[in-house]
Amino acid sequence: MDELPGGYWDASGQLHRAFDLAALNGRDEERLAATIETTSAGLVTEVLSRCVRRIGDITPVAPEIARQLLVADRHYLLLRLRQATFGDRVTANLFCPWPGCAERMSIDFSIADVPVEQARHRAPLHTMTLPAADGSPIDVTFRLPNGADQEEVSGSLACNEAAALTLLLSRCIKRIGPHESPDEHRIAALSAAARSEIEQRMQELAPKVGQAMDATCAECGRPFTAPFDIQRFFFGELRTDDDVLYHEVHYLAYHYHWSEREIMQLTRDKRHKYIAVLAGAIEGLNGGA
Image (tube, rainbow, N blue to C red):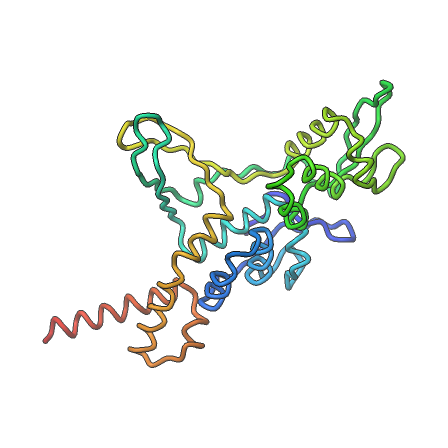
């Protein structure tokens, strides 16, 4: 049984971690490849609400539930969905970052190699104490960022990082001292040191899924760390394989006389198994001739 590294807290305070998911079928692949230009956070929500069958006792997993999952939990589900749809092995092409080399190379690793760090302390809300301007301590209560925060903040992140952080904190901070649900003005009034300390505490408490992989250049032999953006990589594979999907549909329809609807309901793994069987049969017939 697989479990989320963080987990989803429902309105009654129950934590849900175990999950079941289904691999993308052809129709899912086609739809997502066609909408690849929308925001990545929105696409993750759509993918998870379509493919995650259960989280704890919650089924079906509606888009609103998928939005409320912690960021690392969403990344973890994408990893497992990638494994179920494309297989366990990952091959990526990149250039060596070392000066004087810059040779094109490829790295190959398993989904199981991606490091996953469990949440240090699971709770729907967390409280920390900060020193106030007059030296007296002040309590700050917050929740950890989720997919809905990603969707909301992504538009302003590229153009104004400080404003995006203020927006994120205003969504996640539930109380500052006696003030419940503080607005952006009260968040912005916090000192830079206080904001940084809150952000750091959030990062410490949140579960993590590795966004980098260790590699060694085959040309110069020097090691380096390669970035691994799970969202970008996952949706990039969908776009790359869009034409392949239609060739597979044509191949199976031509030989088996199945309808497009029937073929598009198959997962990638099932399509490839039929194609392998068919290719073997055709090769046998040609060899017999």
